[in-house]
Image (cartoon, rainbow, N blue to C red; front, side):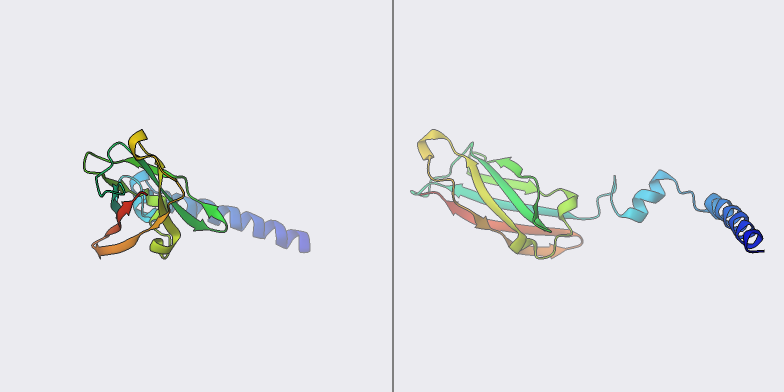
Amino acid sequence: MRFLFRALTLVFMVALGEAVGDRMRWTRKELVEIAGYGELKLSSVILTASLLSSSSDPISGATVGIMCHTGHRRRSEVIKAVTNEFGQFTIDLPSDLHAITNLDKACSIKPLSVPKPHRCSHKIYRGIKLVSSSNGLRFYTAGNITLH
């Protein structure tokens, strides 16, 4: 009797699963919408800052990187950018970092390579600060980073 009950239960579950499975098949577009990512960008996190020499001159051609602690003793990859002729750089954070709580405490910026005339210690880490947030767009800044 127990065997019969288990067999009927199994047959019922398989039949129900197939019937539900036919209704539960989504298109790629629907899956992207449900998951909240994919081709449709739902949010943006933009980070800006300037790199200056000790004499307040802009440093162009320097590579800077932002690193975020994603929790559980893990850090994100270093996202890199190069400064323009005014020493400014902009980084659009990848979408996998958008959900980090307290992004301003979890992320920091560091100069990675600086042109020869401005070489200094690379042990400079700068935190970021939220400037504005609206309609899925957040702007952070690290202000002016001065190398000594």
